[in-house]
Image 1 (tube, one colour):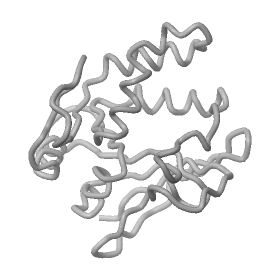
Image 2: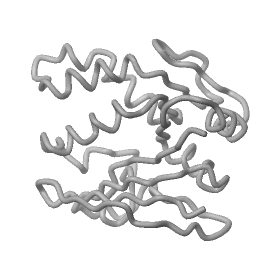
Image 3: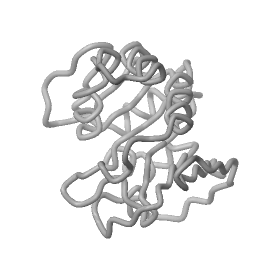
Amino acid sequence: MRRLTFDMNVTLDGYIAAAGDDIGWGGRPSGELFQWWLDREQASGLSLYGRKLWETMSSYWPTGDRQPDATPAEIEFARNWRNTPKVVFSSTIDRVDGNTRLVTGDAIAEITRLRAGNGGPMTIGGATLAGAAMRAGLIDEYAVVTHPVLVGGGTPFFTALDSRVNLNLTQTRTFPGGVVLTRYETRR
């Protein structure tokens, strides 16, 4: 069975995007934090995206390695992003590019099928998609990268749940700028 991880940058008050879908509150990550994200991406065998996150990522990373100010880690991230298989879940878009497949039907059924299959670990991103996977009990690990900023509202990292999910803390790490990573595994 494949593991499913939900990794996101989060404000101290728990939002992945401020009002108006603003994700600029985190600023440019330190080299150390960006390397952590690159390592996570390289360890993933399949990336699952909701529509909004897909639109954000696909607007930059297909050519991110050709940007004039791209660092070596950003160049590697862009190349890895293009090469990693991706599944986008959306009922409002009709086409995806590159190494990507679009699913317009039942996201939970497809994630359950993918999770039961063979292959490397999977990551999931996008508040709505990840929220549905949380409620279905499909997420094995949460990696919360908390930035020292309060935005007061927006899109929450954690969705409303039908029941409690007990977690075990597996790692904490501090990055430059007061950014803190906490990783948790779901107790099953």
